[in-house]
Length: 273
Image (tube, rainbow, N blue to C red; front, side, top):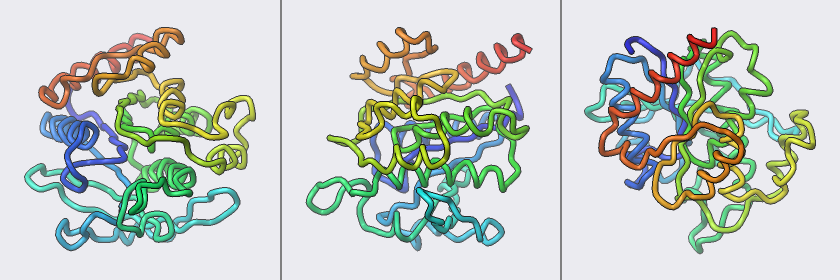
């Protein structure tokens, strides 16, 4: 496997956010993929806790001027980029002042979930897809990490399945435990329905939990990676719905394993053709 294009979309990546299973795994897998001779693009939200000066973020002017429509509202999309130290790899940051200019990630100083996390999830997922489209960069593999990225597989399947840029891409979704307690608000479902997604496909998303969102991603993925222990509900969902899955609990320590997963997916795709 050489020269393939692999797109990573993750809600958390180290060193821009603290080390945890999702941020560490995303970094390790993206770095290993990049070092193996593949072309890599990495996307994450530009949370306000990220120090732009320390990490040398700068706006990508040629990608400026885009908006993402969220429930009939045009929300400006700002793209920033930074180089990962010692990795010869860049990270693109999806930014919007209203959604991300705050000094916390998902909860406020009192530990309460931000009421607009539903809209932030919509914005990040749609913004990442729109940015890849504007870049004109055709991925062979799209590897999505975590609940905040979980709408990407659905949007790709329902709206980009015939788009030459995305139609041949294999979608991998990595599920994790780190998420949130409780549920998101109703604007996620409303946003999906505003985008003319059929009502029966949004059942159960009135107050989505991290479990609901990760199952939704699995529904439209070609493969699910169980990124850490304690994801029995995801394994059960995959088994009940014939979704292929692999145990990825050791991938951060041995990221070379992901290359075998990608290669198997691409080989299966060639056989299907």
